[in-house]
Each structure stands twice: as structure tokens, then as C-alpha cells.
Length: 154
Picture (tube, rainbow, N blue to C red):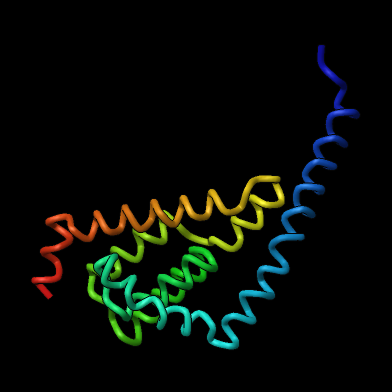
């Protein structure tokens, strides 16, 4: 049995509007938080404290800032930061690749955690699991022969 369009269409529109409003509840405050973090250069300070992570992941210290931005704020900001930093002080192809791998596996921890929380999920589990997977995949990728050889060529 099917419902008439005059019942289905308002239901679809109401569902879409409610979903958009729920996402706005998360995204707008996050955008404000992101702008505050960028204005006070808190991401740069975080990257400076994560020097030990560079050794674990096999990346250079110059790659930590775009990595931190990508993990905290998402791929769009992270990729933009990565491109901008690469213009000023070029990263090696190896670092660029490893940062991209890490950001692919784990990006936007803050925004997705808020979205998971709004959906009723435990925010800690998916966030930590994504971080762990990203560290393991990037660490493994850094030790692959064709990526390891890249450092010797530069």
C-alpha cells in the first residue's frame, strides 16, 4: 500500500529541514571554535607539543601543523593548510603523502565527535578508534619500501 504524494512530500521536506537544523546546531558552534583556535594559534602550539608523533609516524616536524589542523578541523582546512605550508616551505613528497594518508584515515575529530554525540553514540570510542587506525596505517605506510625509498632520493 502506498501513501499519496500530498502525505509523502511534506514528510520528506520536514525530515530534511529537521536534519539540516540538527547539523547546524553542531556545525555553527564548531566553525566559531575553529576560528578561535586559528586566531589564537592554538593549533600551532599543539603541533609543537606533538614532536614525538613525527618520529612515530615517520614524518618531518614541518608536517605536524597541517596534520594537526586536518585531524582537529577536517580535511578541507587540513588540505588548505597543507597546500599553503607546502607553498611557503615545501614538504618532501614522503611527508606530503604520509600526512595525506593520516588525514584520509582520521580527519575532523571534533566535528564528527559532535555529530556522533548528537546521534546518541559514545563519542570516545569512534574518535579513539579512528586515531588508532590512522596511526597504525600511517606508521605502516612510512615503512613501505617505495615510501621509505623516497626519503633517500630527496
